[in-house]
Length: 90
Image 1: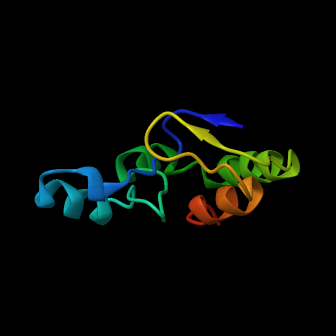
Image 2 (image 1 turned 180 degrees about the horizontal axis):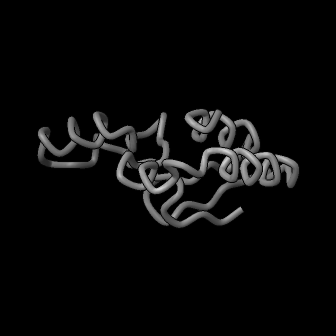
């Protein structure tokens, strides 16, 4: 599965600025627990039902790997990582 901005998973230990690392952790886009950025989540307000249906569809594809545009990819356990990273969709 290839995702662009839906999940970000930055390895903050590579950032020279510790403040930036803290911000990435605060907005939940730091590895190993990368998720959907908070500003992007806001676009789903009022569309939770549709988001949940889309998540079910993506999980049914049973992805083995997830390639991300931003941060470390999930090269194994793709379905579990997708479910974990999108746990905010209930």
